[in-house]
Image 1: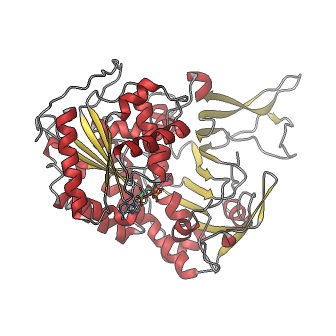
Image 2: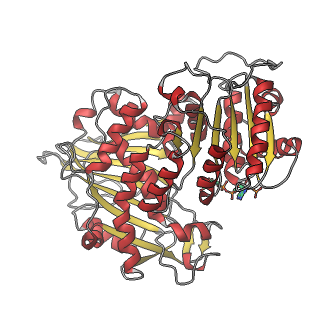
Image 3: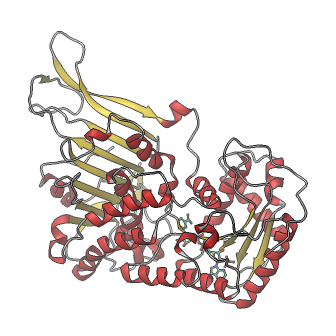
Length: 527
Ligand SMILES: NC(=O)c1ccc[n+]([C@@H]2O[C@H](COP(=O)([O-])OP(=O)(O)OC[C@H]3O[C@@H](n4cnc5c(N)ncnc54)[C@H](OP(=O)(O)O)[C@@H]3O)[C@@H](O)[C@H]2O)c1
């Protein structure tokens, strides 16, 4: 397809890790927020860590006209502002910047793809990127099918077989697609069908940035790289599991997007069901992409979607009203800009799901997410059953109430912030009596490794460059997850305002949510 030609004059220092083959990256939506805040800072970090190949180029594609030079300058400013490696090192920036180009056109315009083809041919000849192409759709979701269809029509996508047969074929094409992947089950199925007209499933990388987080991957290493926890990871020992994604921010100017989405689409369908499947999956036979994703999708298939009549029993939805957070007043969600005055969109959701398989039957999984909550935190809590006998007195400690039972063991996987893992156990406090107080055994990522975890986009971009789709969502996962939330979406939409509970901004959600879990004899774990 191309002739490797001019070898770049700056060589990349050796890396102890696998470095991708030469390739070109095309970013659609190259002037957008995601590109500025996440994608280029991640590319810079990969260049900083010598993880980019020597022969590499990036072409930005967006509507506004600008020169290659102006685009490079814009990106330099973004990297300066958002990179985790600051100040930016001139020699690393130079290595990245010399391969950055820009094509301006509307996504709908075939002439833009002809110009892109020309630019690709030019950089492929110049940098010897061998016709390997990675397309990143950082575009509004309404443009996904347009861009993919136009790429196919312009002949810019190679056949999928290189992915299937290893590296014997001369070049590969891959596409990364951002969330939201569909608006409901029907639109997700239709979107997949459209994408598959141009790309084979092995070429499609659906991104969920949660899976790029170090501590999310740590769920797998913790579970399957240690022998002491896995035997306790089942219905015999676990009482229930809680997954919490709490945001202290409100909608922050994204009212237009959020009002059409809501918490269920924004958090539960993707990030939370992904977390759940990692926590609940069986050990895969190998750690390759298909084996891991086979096990994840089995978990989703083992969850029965609630019948329409039961949605009210297994869910609580809420919306925040005026309140205060960290001393600042927060307006009601309905008063946010670009939110409909009579909005019934949920900003809080609590859901009880059951994974009907041999490992988990009878163990509830509580998913809870909300905006304008007191803290910004994502964590998974595995609560164990209480000891069968009460041999020891329960010593007074902060938060203890007279008559409290022995506190059950709890394993907390903190995804963000202060990434780490902690295990709550009962221990004897100093003194002459044998009694119990809760104490924590813990691992804090930063203390142990002395660095902050890498940004999720760094890992995910690198994996796609290497052709490893383990941490990307497969078609059947997306559709099964939509199948689970679809009945809830429909029931909530039909109920309108009925059943919508309100909570003041700055609280942990509506009191209905507390009653919901208390009805099961349990309580929320608030960090
Ligand atoms: N921002 C985030 O942190 C974030 C996080 C997760 C997922 N996402 C997803 O990532 C995608 C991009 O989000 P974003 O926040 O970066 O969006 P954005 O800031 O609105 O950027 C959209 C980009 O698309 C371009 N564009 C839009 N319509 C076009 C058209 N018809 N022809 C040519 N170019 C067009 C814009 O170019 P011009 O400026 O030249 O018009 C701009 O570069 C979305 O699917 C979003 O859901 C974003």
